Amino acid sequence: MTAVAPAVTRGGTNTGPGPGWGTVRTVLRVHRAALLVWGALVLGLSGWLVWLASVTADEGRANQEACERAGRHWCDLTFGTFGFSEPVGWIAVLTAHVFLAVAAFAGGALIGRELESGTAHLAWTQGVTPARWLTAKLAVPALAVALGATALVLVFRWVWTANQDLLWVTGWMQGEVFVARGPVTVAYALCALALGVLTALLLRRALPALGVSFAATWLLALFLADRRASLWPAASRTSATQVVDPPDGAWRLETGAVVHGRRVPNVEFWRCDGKGAEVWRRCLEDNGVTGFYTTYHPESHFWPLQLVETGVLLAIATVATAAAYQVLRHRTA
Image (tube, rainbow, N blue to C red; front, top):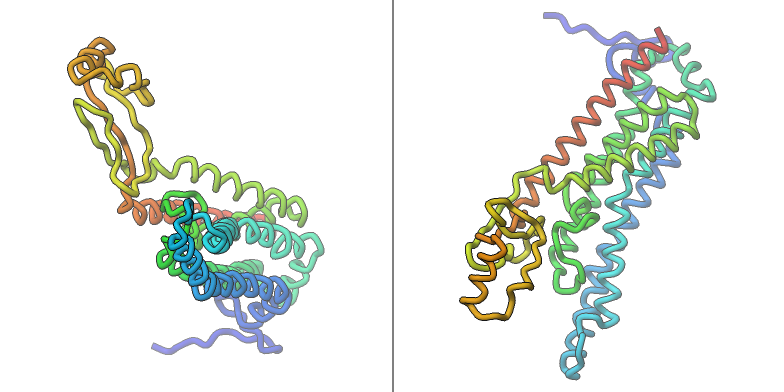
């Protein structure tokens, strides 16, 4: 079988399938400022985390030990601990919401501005097909976003895991921490890129596309955060005699009583408290309480929840990308 070389224009630009190196170089040149800002953000946050883990953490532990030797109370709230936990919390917020900047860039600068100014149409008349132009526009930032977000997640996980004793909020289920510690960060960024591109192709104006893509990804994140607990089946504990607590480190979802055979959350158990075992039992019977329950996600559900949410976001990104090609094909037919 004879290999067929890709077609080449007079200027050396690849005209075969794929984005072509000429188109990729154009994307890198046009958006080099944004790529440099993204790289600086990733390096800055990663460097800050390394500094906190290497320098600030040791200072915090030294302050804690000095406080405990002095016999003071609330030693976990010393300045050293505050100086570590507070910035780590802010880095988690920035990492978990970096996808909003990606959406704004994709809608406003990456696609919207070029459609509004006519630069895209000029490229299409210079031997670059619309499909190849869009492929390059998606591939280059997608690679940069995926690599940068992955680096942030890996550094954040290392710092978070190694310094639990200095953190105020250590629960794995906390919103920003949950996102910043797993692949869902990368999925949010890629989904934001795809939604921003689709929005820009639909609106064809930079500012409206920037605003709509920002709002759409923000609302999507709010929706998934609200539904996160239902993305994986929760565990349950029951008892016939006492209120049930979830295991240590678990994400408590609901605690309640079985009243007349029906689960009722947040029942006022205090009405039967402090009256002796026999009176307690009779009080429960008088109120129709036949047992207690609690539903929760154990810490082992971190990865199932992460992977399901990641899959949902990547599916949305795939659909948005396919829709973007369809819209571009329709507009340039």
